[in-house]
Length: 165
Image (cartoon, rainbow, N blue to C red; front, side, top):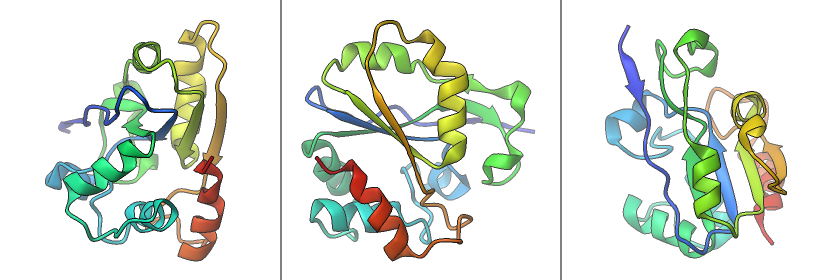
C-alpha cells in the first residue's frame, strides 16, 4: 500500500484558531487542496460563517480563511490508507505532524477545533502529551466529510458557528 503524504499548514502569524482534520482524502490529495471533495461541506460552511463565496478559487478561499485568523492543518502528516475513510488508516503507519512546534511558532493560537472525532482522538493521543504549559481550548465539531451524513449542512453549519469569536 502506498504511503500518503499530507499538506503543510496554512496560517498567518496572526492566527488565533487552528482547525485540524485527520488526513486529506483521495480527492484532496489528487487536487492538492484541503477539502477538495465536492460533497465535503467544509468550504460551504466556512464561506457562510466568514462571509465569502465558497466557489472562489482555492487560493482566495485560503486567503479569506487565514486573514480572518484561522489556521488549517491535519493531525497526520502521512499514513497508509485504502480510500478516504479515517477508519481505513493503518494505525502502525501514522506519522503525526509537528503540531507542538507549529503552536510554538504561532503563540496567538489559543483554540483548536477538530473536524471530526478522528482528528480529536489522534490529537489527544499523540499531540497533547507533547504540549508543555500551553493553555488551549479544544473542541470537536461534526465532520464536514460526506461520509458523516447523519447531520444536514444546516446542522453542521450551526455547530461550526462555535469557531466565531
